[in-house]
Image 1: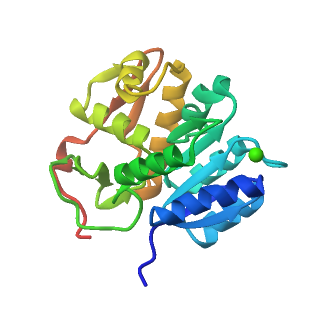
Image 2 (image 1 turned 90 degrees about the vertical axis):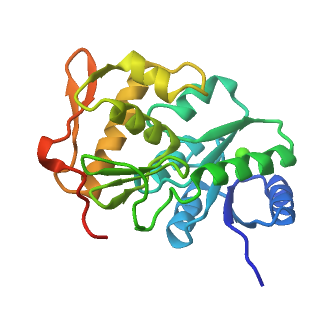
Length: 242
Ligand code: CA
């Protein structure tokens, strides 16, 4: 039997969770339910899902905190479900890092459509070391169609925003991009968020570069101005033989 991509539904309202599962199953996904934050984190660690539907309003550990903690180690696409339109900027930006959101009340059909779109976007971006295709630049290899990036042969588990951020910096290594310029580039399809969101995404991107290659953080911050990608001149296009 073919089992579809696993989707974790984090929702404490049992009936609503069951309804979402029904629609997901009908669309070919394999839903799992977590009724609170701690079991959601447990489930993500034990059985990494292809996508997460995350209710903002959960007992105990709220959806924001759950999202933040998932983001520490995972680039899994997260669709946040919220009744609070005023929280959207925070959800998509800063430290929270959800990929998309839907405001309640939503239709289960719309939820499934968003999940499908997220999975399409993230396909191949997630994990696993593969041969790096596409153009290479100073140790970076990118696959624009699949929105994947490798740093010295190591795959980078980037969120869509981090991907756009890196791609923008790569357009002109050595050039300083202001926060406003980076914000324009990364939030083209989102609403306004603050300059601090750029700092937060850059911080996450640096952490991932460093995690992929120790000492490999090649983004310089220029005090009071913005950020710059610094690639050593002798780096060439060499990547390790993975
Ligand atoms: Ca709830």
